[in-house]
Length: 67
Image 1 (cartoon, rainbow, N blue to C red):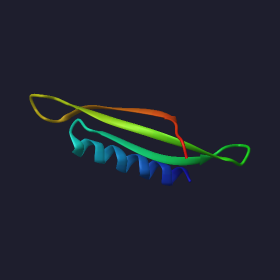
Image 2 (image 1 turned 45 degrees about the horizontal axis):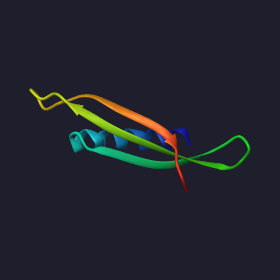
Image 3 (image 1 turned 30 degrees about the horizontal axis):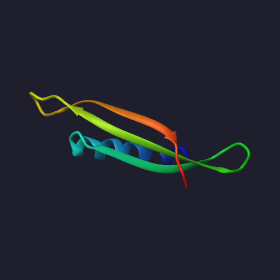
Image 4 (image 1 turned 90 degrees about the vertical axis):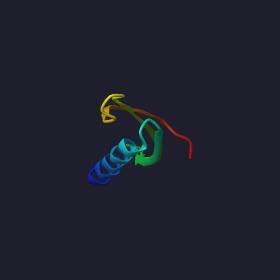
């Protein structure tokens, strides 16, 4: 389960680097301790260096999502 989440996050970060300043949102779910599923949303945005056009850093925010 953790490996699947890691691969999903890695592919999202790789994709956001290609978008050059646009926001990428990914929805996924985790199983809580009580057995219910919790929907989460991660939004990522990369900031480009204006001189080299390379990604300086990537900012991701996580929040509870709707089903």
